[in-house]
Length: 123
Image 1: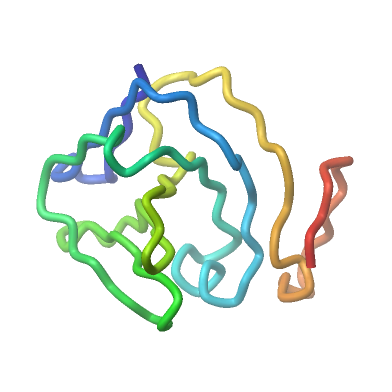
Image 2: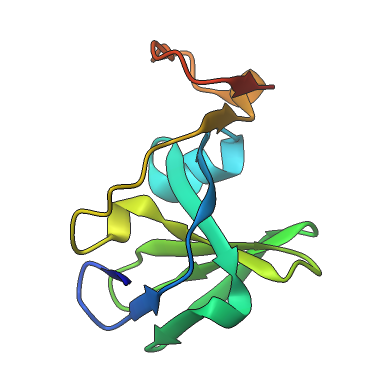
């Protein structure tokens, strides 16, 4: 079982599903929402239990982002019409044994850092 929460504890989430698509997103929107890049994993929405007052924010027509209205934590991302939902790896409460698979939207990465690992990169 995977457990996660926001910084203030108002929102918690759990899943027993095996996450897929573990990625680091370097797009401008993720950088602005998180303050750097955003690492996430994806599970079927039906396999994720969320408790607490998630505030959904749509900053593009393609997706919505789930935030805590109290502490501002950026916890969830879901593409429009998709049955999967991504959760922030940084919000996990315990060691997960998960490993990143790739970097995405690398063409939009900030110029103040380098990607130095050997993971695949998708522009």
